[in-house]
Image 1 (spheres, rainbow, N blue to C red):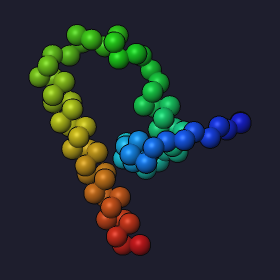
Image 2: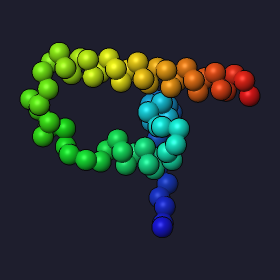
Image 3: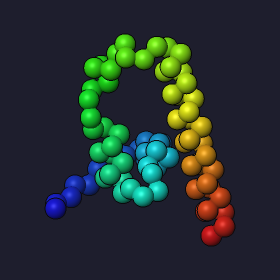
Image 4: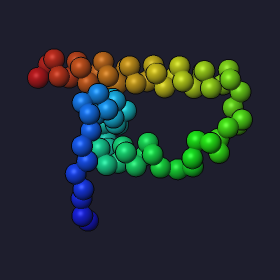
Length: 76
């Protein structure tokens, strides 16, 4: 498979790194994050309360993963 080089601003790279799962490559993460249905097609599926609950759960997950990665880096 051929590859392409993509330049990212440091802050964008950090956002991607925080959302990348431990078992995925950066390519896998980008594919997962940008793939699938356009968000506009999802309008109205969830109530505002459900959206807030999902966002809170995802934020908590990302923070746990970020702390775990930070702890791993501190140990090395």
